[in-house]
Amino acid sequence: MLAHLRSIYKILGPGILFAGAAIGVSHLVQSTRAGAEFGFALIIFVILANIFKYPFFEFGSRYTAATGKSLIEGYKTLGRFALPLFGIFTLATMFIIAATVTIVTSGLAIQVTGWDIPIMYWNLIVVAIVTGILLVGRFQWLERFLKVVVLSLAVITVIALIFALASGMQGSPGFVAPAVLSTAGVTFLIALMGWMPAPLEISIWHSVWATEEKHGGHKVSKKDSSLDFNIGYIGTALFALVFLVLGAFVLYGTGEVFADSAAGFAGQLIDMYTNALGDWAWWVIAITAQVTMFSTTLTVFDAYPRVMNKFVRVMKGEKKYEGRKGYIVWLLLLAAGAIAILATLVDNMKTLVTFATVMSFLTGPLFAYLNYKVVTKGDMPAKMRPPTWLRALSILGLVFLLSFSIFYIAWVFVL
Image 1 (cartoon, rainbow, N blue to C red):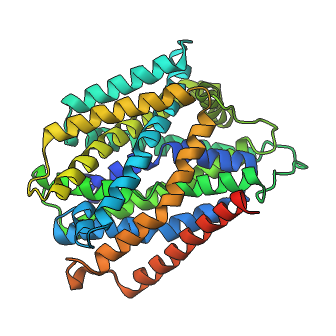
Image 2: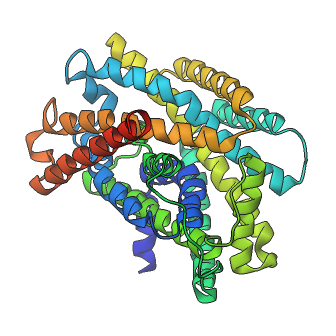
């Protein structure tokens, strides 16, 4: 049994990077808020988002395992417009997503250190540390670091959930949840699903990381690649539900409203855990949450430069995609763009998070469609194409994403 677990642990690679990117804002912030503000009213949407997005994330892993190439190279096989559209949509969202994970990390840093300095200084510190690590670090180091972080958070969160369930719901029995069918409610619902369990562009990140794993000297079988992906995906999906339930049991109906500022929200998040476990756990929770968000920020800042570097090289028709100089240029551009956005929205974390997650949901149908086309046409080997049930689920997923996107736009701008 122990040997089997060790073999699985060794297999974990791009899948754990996927989990490291996903278990951040979407879980610590959005899932917790969903439970705290709406109780269990939104849990069905969390479940549906995880189910209907699954095929499009799986397609990235499937394509790379079958061809040895990333989805970016796959998009080029779909015609002249697919790859440029991907580039435009990525450029439209990458800076604000990087800024979003940075400000949440900074808020937690204020709580952990107790240093009451302006959060913009913390943003600069976080971006500088992350950029410095990635300039001198190695891909394999990031992978090993995230294995420890994700597993540590998983253990602590499960323990907190057990204590919370044993204590029962803390809110007033007569508390009435805010209406979901309101402008604020619908906006939050779309934002919740936008990063549930992660934005769909992470499917591209996963495929790029998988090619990096091969280039790093590891020979990854199709079976191991599938297992690695499914462990990462199913784990993040389950923990989305865990955070929602934890928020519902500890905070729903208590009258506590999440703060707009990153530092205020971070304090409330840590207090949620200590309310479930006791004051003795404050430092354990604070440090674990801090390291988790830092790992998410590190992952995001690593992914976008890799993706955009490969995008430019594939657009140019180059055969080698691993240029380090291009990675560094995109990393520095990402850092500068994130800082510029944070300088504008530094005092309102909730607005930044909502905008980033809504944008991810509205661009989701494009990435979903491209991923579907890549694994059903192009250069995908026929025997490795998705089975009928997965194709059917992906069609339903496209309908789900498009329907809710149209519903949100109609609700905000028409109704």
